[in-house]
Image (tube, rainbow over the protein chains, first blue to last red):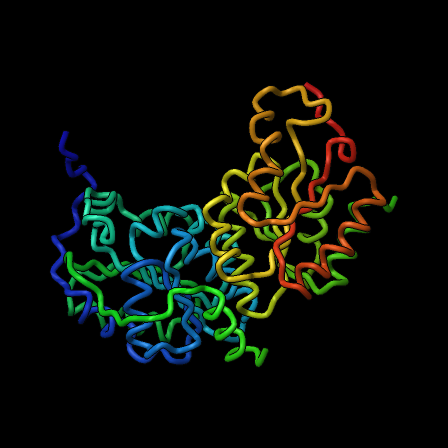
Amino acid sequence: MQLLKMQTATLPDPVLDRREAVPALLGDFSSFLAVAGLAGAAQELIYLSQESPSVFGLVGAMGAALPMAIGLALAQPKRRVLCHTGDAELLMTLGALATAAVMNPPNLRIVVVDNGRFGETGNQQSHTGLGTRIDTIAAGCGIPAVMVVNTADEIPAARALLHDGDGLCFILLRVKEGPALKLRRDLRAHPERDRFRRALLGK
Amino acid sequence: MTGWPEILYADLRGAGITQFAYVPDAGHRVLIDSALADPEAYAIPLTTEEEGVAMLAGADLGGSRAVLLMQSSGVGNCINMLSLINGGRFPFLTYVSMRGTFGEGNPWQFPMGQATRKVLEAMGVIVLEADTAEDVAACTKAALTMVFQSEQAVAILLSQRLIGAKAF
């Protein structure tokens, strides 16, 4: 049986290409520490940062990106921490939005690239593609600043929130289906952990 | 009165642990309340235990030490997320208050309680078990070295002999 769009599916059809919209939204994020969720989100962040050791990209452990970023943000209160993930990855640990709101780390920024799809597994429609509103959920959890980006015109304000805002925020970047920027990389987690810690902590 | 939970909290703080992630359980009440009352520590309520697994890895990336407090029923919620600990060789310390074992009166607790050790070990977590207050201190001393010096994943099971079976 086909899955039907719900009454909550009121946002306009996505028009942005993530290969352009993600770099435009993030701008120069070299001063951030970042955790990126599998799969496209991690690929594009590693590509855009040119494999910076300050980006920890997940290749498994779906749902880890946001809780991991919360732990990192609490550990590094003087650094801004970016959680960059996809809609399906976040859907797996949606409750972490409530945890983020309760802890309210002022240095944490959450960016969700929403293609409305399970992109890695055959492009099946995800809940968000059918009308689940994670921006509304984020606001309902108590995230103090929530922004939805549907068009290129809306990107500068979201980029300003990301870079110049002084508190926890959630940005939903709605994009069309399509590939993320990517490069071939080492998929093993332990060298990535060691590299991240060496760059940040010197050990 | 200073019981094993108060001593345990002091031992964990003394080892530099600053993040206490938890899904509440009666067996962890003193630890949670102590962290909530401690201005130098974070008490982090989770919606599900697997969040805590990832949070501990994030804390480690940032150079902080963290612990996950959960009930045995929550261990099952952590299984795939432990891939992150295993693959990243992250230090991982959890205290599991046991249900579904010694004197349990709620039949729903048995499947996960009886599987707790097997599930943890299947995912590469070393399991220590504390039956007495003395065991808690000894296991904690051992685990702190195993986790933060040798970078292993360790679970300390707080048995129902130690914490008592809830009355039903």
